[in-house]
Image (tube, helix red, strand yellow):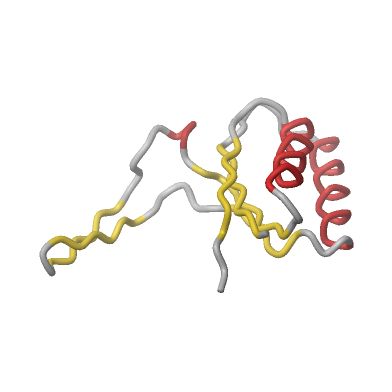
Length: 107
């Protein structure tokens, strides 16, 4: 099962220990074949909407800065419980904030 895990901005902790712990975590997941992709997201997004055949493009931001997804990880695990445990481990490393987990459906 694949899960997309997104996280909000965490401005409370940006230190060398954080970067070391995250590098170790990412290396572990990559070596195990769990981590498929990861990256940061720009704070501004563009919304493309359609209604009655009309396309509208709207530049963001769309939410408060603390609600904007700042990064993502795409993981492949055996169960939702395993994805939740990865999210718990991630939150323990980075500290306060929110992470959202969504199953990714694949053919």
